[in-house]
Length: 204
Image 1 (cartoon, one colour):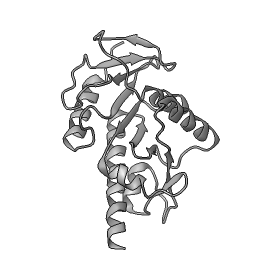
Image 2 (image 1 turned 90 degrees about the vertical axis):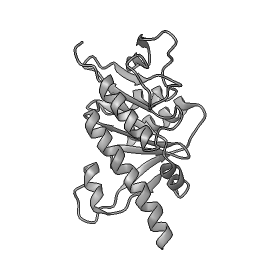
Image 3 (image 1 turned 180 degrees about the vertical axis):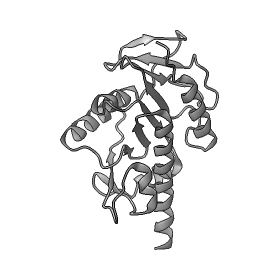
Image 4 (image 1 turned 120 degrees about the vertical axis):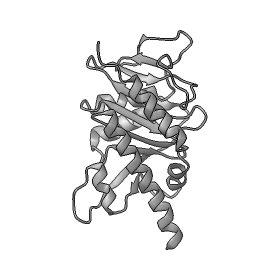
């Protein structure tokens, strides 16, 4: 297995840590390999100081198949990454962060979706319509993370989301993409949209 995405995940995690999106040990990043297993950040690791040993490789059923450090445990949100990769086979990276803006705007959600602003930046999430009516699906933040994963699976099996992103109330945003670079771009766009929505409420 020649491809190793961990250096890319380490670079992204350091960037997101510096932006205040992965403070403490919060958040998790993963990338899928050709055999459909994926590397995911281990639980309890500072995202600003990751090394290649701070990951766990699991298969799509959640079974651990490689531990660079025997003290590592998979991220608590591993089941969400599994669900994303199972629902979207073309996805090869899944990023989840905890920003202040994501949590603030999640408090303004009514129903099961966050209505996104019809602005130019939506193109960064693949929306190329004029005056688009686009929403980001939202989910309740259960202490039992596999319950969140199951609700994501159930909902997406009925209706695919408008954008490759979802928001967990009082928790954070998750994005997925074909590449690690694209996942980072999607994450930046999502966080921009959250900031925009917060600022828009202040000037209404």
